[in-house]
Image 1 (cartoon, helix red, strand yellow):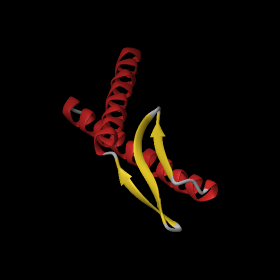
Image 2: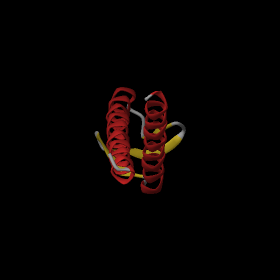
Image 3: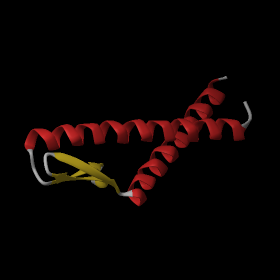
Image 4: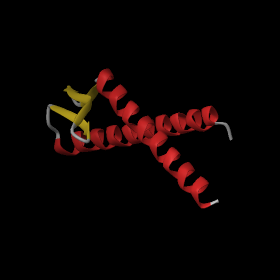
Length: 95
């Protein structure tokens, strides 16, 4: 497979993983907010705040922190490319 295609696929996989990770964290953030019944809760990944939940009456409304979500996506995409390249180098070295 060409290097450009490998890297593109790794970026896509990293992006999908980041979206899934943030979705799960936000879901558990909502679950935690409703169970603790506090006014404001911030959802974090690795200490980076990505989503803020604010109580409005009996329900919570959410506001994304876009720049931090982008940083988490970039981090996951970078890690995905690094892992892909390491696997490729090891596989190439063994053959």
